[in-house]
Amino acid sequence: ENGFLAPMEKNSARGVNTGVAMMNPTWEPMTVELKLCAVDGLERASSQVTLAAEGHLARYIHEFTWDQAVDFSDFRGLLKAEAPPQLAATVIQTRPGEFATMPVVERLLNVENVSSDHRLYFAQFGDGEGQLFSQILLVNQAEDVEASATISLRDDDGGPLEVDLNGEVVEGSLAVTVPAGGLKVIETDGEGDLAVGSATIPTDCGGPRRKAAASTVRTVAADRSITTTPLALWAMSST
Image (cartoon, rainbow, N blue to C red; front, side):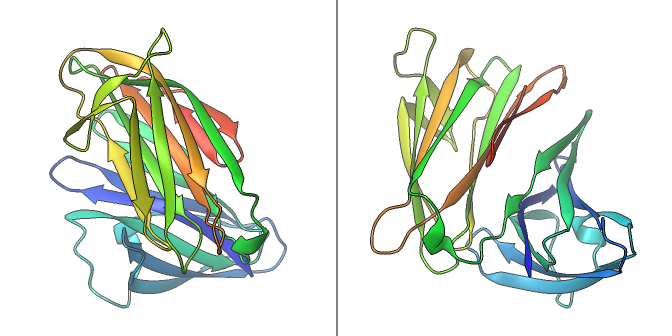
């Protein structure tokens, strides 16, 4: 069995909703076991769905039948799916005036085999003037140890880019840790002077137990126009 990890967000006040679309390319029905976890990696609820042979299923996170009650009025976390390796899936997300898709993250059965060399590059990262905001999602694929990463931000001249991340002014770099099997969300507020540049995210996979973090960066303009370009096996950028 293999599967995927998918960042989830639902916020009723801001009109944000996230879900997943799944496809079964085989000629036999496929059962998918789902676990809903908070950002700390701890399980909150579980569910199960069956996809028909060559079938498709798309649901927002609150539309699954969970075995425990979950408050989805303001939720962030991870959807963890266990399924045969043939399963294909895509994250779907809506915001006011916006529809976006994001890749899921592969569920690793053996993190020990992950290369320690991961450096992700994003050519567009911006914030400000109520026109632009950016969001970084870091997913820890290891279930038993936290992961670490340092986000490096550079302006047009290669100098440190100053932006507001999670309510804190950051100049050039930010070190973060991601809980075991969990999710870390870092985002700008879209306010203040316009600041545009690039982001680099090397992840720390060294130490006695290897750690692995997959990353997604979303940069969205005020006109909500979105194009998606896969940058690497573990990354996607939207502008």
